[in-house]
Image (tube, rainbow, N blue to C red; front, side, top):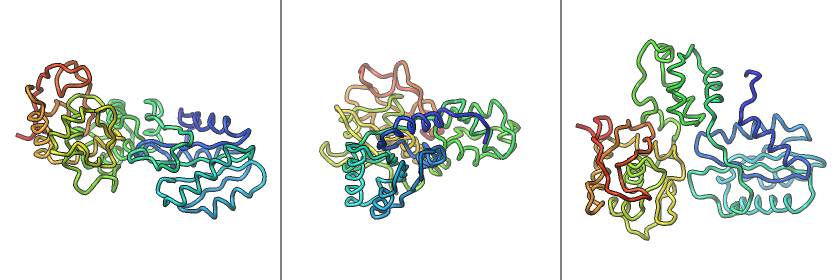
Length: 331
């Protein structure tokens, strides 16, 4: 590690300073690969007020024992959303006692944001981890790369990772020293299906087609984070009142992925034939419009926000259909 203090490290220190005096609670959340566990580890290293306790999954009794410690205490609970419902309820009651009394205890929980939040923890204050800054991403590359990285390659990797630390490290692992050094061309896109699947892991459903792929195709075509729910449901032949997959959420007639990384992974890991079929289904569902084929970006890269074209966004208007590239739409 270098002596450089990153934005994420400053955020950790500021949070501990804010909570240290009278104790407090935060639910730390973010998309897969954003560094929730690393955040807890750094908080534990920075905490100087007293002992630090890491409570294992479903460790209600362990949590109660920790809270009997006299004086300032930091309790870290990673992946609290994976606890069973009774244990989460007990955890929420403990958090409530910490917030309502003057005990000098700080409780940090981590919860994933790619699925619905646990109802037992919904009322607790939340800290959302944002993407790495470009400078911090460059520092991570410098610390973790096994060989020299060409400046142009570094910038391309930072752009492809979109601030996700796990994705950035997966990109580094996927490239040879010659590719990192700029002596051989990078795969295009750098963050293709295999790399994104490496980061998403078992979070990807076994069959991510249907509504998931149709939604991913729609947001890719518009360059927006969300899509018209009625249009996507028609294209996917899904009932309007049917339960949504956990990766999706709906609000004010709009559908979106809870995690941008999971949207990229669903799209990039689908076959070119399935991607093209999803875009054609969206075109057919867009009554009276020319429809949508894949945008000109490659499968693993987020689509730029177009000036015109793609599916109708919030502003409406007649779309201009972009030509599908071979990598996204097949021949």
